[in-house]
Image (cartoon, rainbow, N blue to C red; front, top):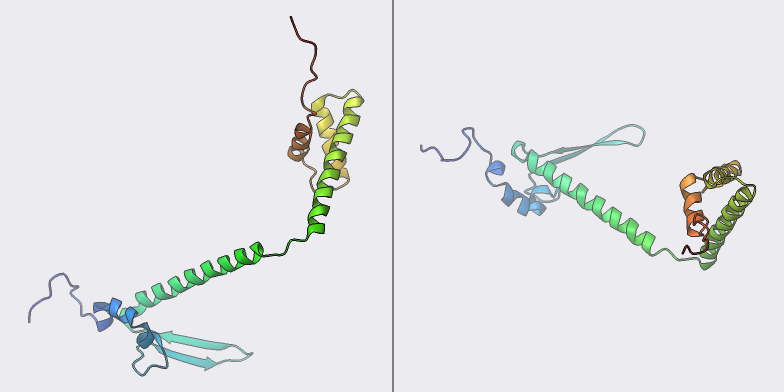
Length: 169
């Protein structure tokens, strides 16, 4: 008897020797209804409406079987994400809701500017006026009350620009 060059010294089952063939014939190998099915499937009744499922692949096929399950898991995760994205993208747009959101944003901007102008009108420095504006919004429990948002609104409205004075000659 000759030794096979490049093969493992232990005896190989037919699945280790030709795993690609077994996977290409997945309908025969994994289908429990096929007469030549190589994987054993059993269902055991349990209490409280639960059942135990047992899948027993041949010993040489365990890695390939796990790889198949992992790839199916990846496929269905991918499809689930795509389905969610498609659902979100096709959601109907309620124009009245969009208008309400825009109005809420405008009200917030005008409130921030009015509070800031009131504090600067009292002679407070700009940074102190921003702090007090933010504190007033937080006292009202406004959802956008934070220093960065208040500063961005004031910057966009031009409140941080220095007043222009006459030209120097």
